[in-house]
Length: 182
Image 1: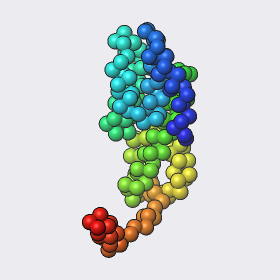
Image 2: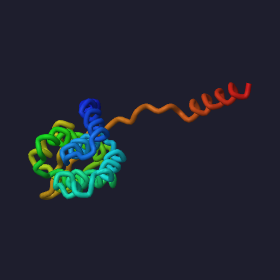
Image 3: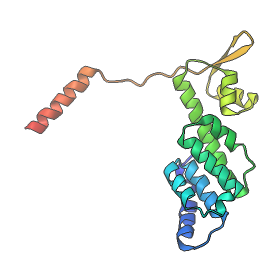
Image 4: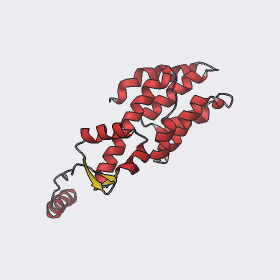
């Protein structure tokens, strides 16, 4: 997914916001959804503050703001709970892209933070169906084990990137300081 995917639309919507006095909720909905997809959480928060009070009662805008709050607080459970909504066509694409991006991030985080995780815990956190979870885990080469009647998912072990030795780094730093002193 490319973050520039919506750049022209954002530019047009931002110009529209600056040029017009009264805007409908649709412009704010699209901008908010795209800001969330682009991970511009501060811009999304500031946009929410600029939305006129009468438009803040729009259900879709409120739902998008709940997504923003969940993302700002790194609360995956709330995010996945709030994204389950019947989105209008104008925000459906960026919201679906956001969902895919956040699921990828969740699996990346789980894969690097845990050696294993119970399937029901991951199901509860991601709000995916069991089939969706099995498909996602298979795509990432995660393995399954049974612990009685519970399924344990084990992420593929990731190799650590090669690191330079401390002596090499110290030597490079010493050379740099010597260069600066001369």
